[in-house]
Length: 189
Image (cartoon, rainbow, N blue to C red; front, side, top):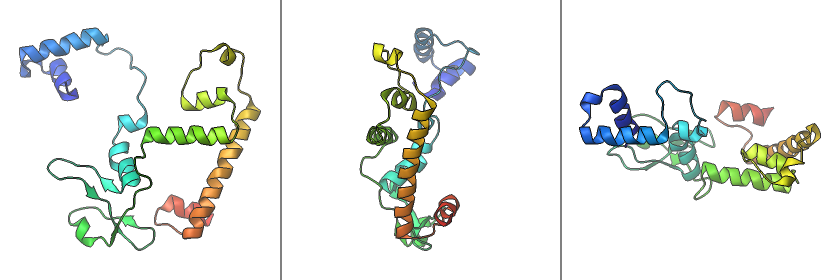
């Protein structure tokens, strides 16, 4: 069932067929849903919003997804100022002078978590601290007797900061400015 159908059953049951109402009510009972009850743990931000669809996917693939009758299409940009600014609105493709290149084929928000874990491995981060940052819980005996210290956090932050600054230097070598205000300030800072 769609969210809209479930909402209609809860808010305007007379607009939904009896069979569909029954199916939704069975699901409500099985899931233990209580109207006005406490909110369950929130999903990651890319599932709660259109972050993955309209920001992450275009950056990772170079393409906007299919929407309605319109198929997927490349992210049109103005090549100047380099590295390009997305062109939006009616006739964007006709006004564009280039398209985004994908960051990496098959990159997903979940894949970034794997990259973060790999970077922490390279920085010799203690497993307990990695689990905390990844949102994992290790129920092993080892995890019970291991604790995260301020020094562990400081070393991890210093290592990640060094990696960030090296990446910023590599980006600065390509071009010292950016049309993205935050990145431009970082490159010139």
